[in-house]
Each structure stands twice: as structure tokens, then as C-alpha cells.
Image (tube, rainbow, N blue to C red; front, top):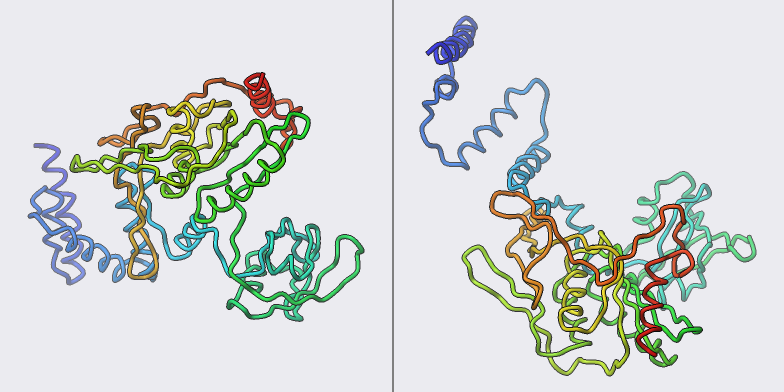
Length: 406
């Protein structure tokens, strides 16, 4: 009773202040304090709160950020890190991650005090056709200096309408001379697959950065090159691969087996959906395979590794994977934003499930795919890409493949 009376007095006290200022007390506010608010439709409550803040807050509040914050708050209450609101710019960036397609000149740029430096030049890209090379420094775009301009702004200037020209002032890495080149913008695909052939052991290496639209074609091209060199063992490196498109994982697995289940997805109503590999895409690849993975291997990369392991086609080496067994779908919003929503949980063919699975209460179950051979990296050794002497996991993969050939 004392608590009820204190709450009531607290509410009435503020109502009296309203009366002193010539305003009637807010009946809903008083009812809320004593727990007497009638059932209100959620959309009415949201609109009421939105209008209240917009009209009474001490400073002007822009409507768009307020709406974004409200949507973000609702989604955050689910306790699911994979369900999220994507404002227009974030949605655009996310869609690029899955498509890896853009209109530009086809290169990656790094910060440089003189402008921007080319960190990579994509194969058969407008940049390559214009004679640009890794290490070249762009100091001007269409005659205007870009010194001191943020890299993101430079990227916006270089990108444009497909087929249109862009004139670049460049300091060549090889000669130090300043030249002007013209590149014609085109649709380019960012590389998601890298490869190397270890000639001393006849072992091929393919690294997959993400499972996006161009990944399968790029994988096929890299594998063709390795097979022509006489590859006798294959390493597929999924370390640091955050995943991507389920369809891409399925199509990539079709290169190794056909007409078999990849995952079984279970929806909220208990219904199930099965994703299986199509036929007629299996490659002639009769070599032992090792898959490298670590704590940052997630989602589609776990599906790929898990299926290859469950069907007895690969040995898993490295550290346990991230552990994500949920499926998301992006629903578009009217303002070019999007909401990425978890719509199902998936299960591998043999491994029942894995991962920090978000259950109905938002709690996490620890897990992840466990490697067949666990290898920890030495924290005292600075890792060096594709150098077995400075990468214990890569060295172990080569050792396993060499032993299987004997």
C-alpha cells in the first residue's frame, strides 16, 4: 500500500504542476503509473510515442533517425544478433557483400598521403586494361586533385555510369612518373577466390573469402588452373570466411557430389525445407581434400565444410568454427532500407546441428564444427599468407595431404 500511495502521489504531484501551468493532467500518464492503462494497439502506441517526442522534446528531433532507432530497438529486443535493421547505406553495403558486383574500374584502394594507392587490380578489369598496376598512386580524378580527400569520397568519384570514361592522374609505382590514363567504367566482380600451386608437393590451394554470386565461377576457373598443373591434393581455406549465400554453397558443393541433401531448414511452424545439390555439375576431382577453418568461419562456409566432412570428402583442420545454424532473409523496406530476419534454423546431413543457436528465449548454446585435426597458431609467430613456415594450420594441411598420397 505504501508503494502504491507513493506512486500515486508522485503522479498526482506532476499533475498538480500541470494544473498550476494551466494544463489538464495527462490522464494516460496517471493511469500508466497506477497500472490502469487499457489495451492499446501497438501501432497506436508507437505513433503516440513518436509524436510525443517530436512535439515536446527539448530540442528538435529529425523524424528519420527516430524511426530507425525505433525499428532497431524492436529488433534488438529479440536477442538475435543475426536479425537486424539495415538503413539504406548499410543495406547497399550488405548487398554488395553478397553480389560482389559494382560499376567502376575494378581495383581496391588504400590510403596514401598523396591520394589513394592501388592495393589490388582485378583481372580483365577496366583498371587493368588501362595499364594500372598494384602500387600505383592515383592523385587526381577528372583533372581535380584528390589529396586529403577521404578514400570513400574518391571511390564515389571513380564510380559512375557503366560505359562512361574517367580520367585518372597516376604516379606509376615502377617509374615514379606522373601519367594520365582513361578507364571506361564497367560492371566488375570483386574477387572472392584466390589460388596457389605448391609445386614441390603438387598440392593446390584455393582460398574462399565469401560465398557470393561470382564465387562458383571463380572457383571453377581457379580449380581448372590447378588441375592443369597436375594437382594431387587440394586445400580449401575457409578461415575468416563469414559465409554468404546458401545457394552459392549448394552450387559449390555440387562440384563434389550430386543429388544429396545439403541442409534441412526448419521454420517457426515446424515445416521443413530441404536444399540439395543438383546433378550434372560434379567435377572429375579424384584427390584428397583438406578444409581449413577457424572461429571466423561461419554460416555458408560452415555448411560447405560440414557437408564435405559429413559425406566423407574432406578432413577438417584448424580450430572450431563460429557456430551459426540459422537462415536469414532480407525484406526490403519502402525507403530502400531492409530488415534481415532469421526465418529458419538449418541442420546438416549427419551433424544434427551446431553453433551458438539462438533458441526461443534468446539464449546461446555453445558449439561450432569441431576439426578432425586441431591446430593452434603460435601467437609469437607473425602469420604470413601462404607461407607454411609461418602458418602451422597450412603446414599441417600439406602434411596430411602428402601422407594420404603415399
